[in-house]
Image 1 (cartoon, helix red, strand yellow):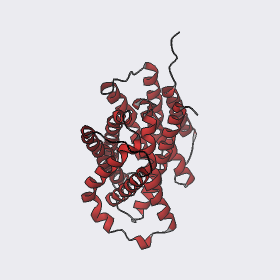
Image 2 (tube, rainbow, N blue to C red):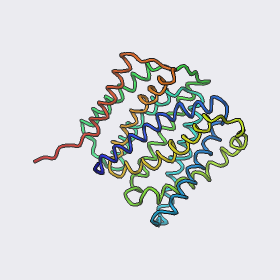
Image 3 (cartoon, rainbow, N blue to C red):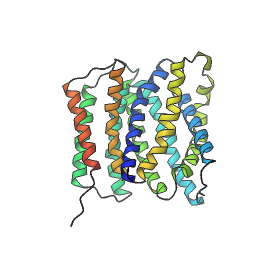
Image 4 (cartoon, rainbow, N blue to C red):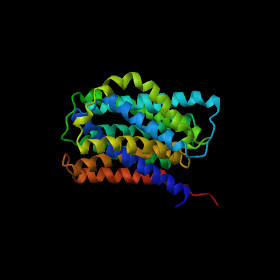
Length: 297
C-alpha cells in the first residue's frame, strides 16, 4: 500500500470510528451513566495519558516555542469547543441527525482550505461535494431513529457549531503536520485541552458511579476513549499529511451511512430504496473527490 493509499485507509477508519461513536456515546449518556461534560473530560484525560505514555518510546521531536501558541488555538477548536458542543448536542438530538449535520464539514473545509491554505478547488471536486451533500440531505430527510431527543433543535445547533469548530481545527493542524510527526504535537494539543476542559467537566466526572457500570457500558467508554478519541486524533493527521484538507473533509459524508447502518444493526432504523440511493450518492461523491487528477502530457 502506497502512502496515498494508507492515507485514504486512515481517513476511512476515522469515519468508521466516528460513525460508531454517535450511537455508542449516546447510549452511555441516555442511561445516565455519565453526563456530557464529564464524558468529555474522561475521554480527553484517557487519550492524553495514552499519547504521553506512547511518546516516551518514540524518537523525540522538539516543538518550536512559536508553535505552542498555534497548538493552544488548535486545542481550543479541536478539543475544547469541538468536544463540549458535540457531546452536549448529542445528548439532545439523535445519532443519525448528528451525523447528517456533520456533513457540512466538507463545505466549510473547502472554503477555508481555498482561502487559508490556497488549495486549488476543481470543478470536479465541487461536483463530488455536491453529490455527497445531496446524498447526506436525503439521509437527513428520510433517516429516522427510534431515539427522541429532549431538545432536537438545540442539539442540532450545537452539533453544527461543533462541525464549524472541527473544520477550523483541521485547517489549523494542516500546517503543523507538515512540520512535525503527529505524536510530537498531539500530546501537547491534548494536554492543553485537558487543562482547559477540567473546570467544565470536573463536577460531572466526580458524580460518576463507577460501581454501577455493566460490562457493556465499560466497553463502550473504552471505545470512546481509545477508538473514537485516541485513534481518530492520531489517524487524522496521518491522513492530512498526504491528502488535501478538502479531500479529507469529504469523507465526513460517510458518517451518516455508518451511523445509519449501525442503527439498523441495533434495530432502531429501517432500510429502503431512498436510503440505498442516498448512500450510493455519498460513495460516488467521495470517489470523485478522491480521484487523482491526470497529469497533462
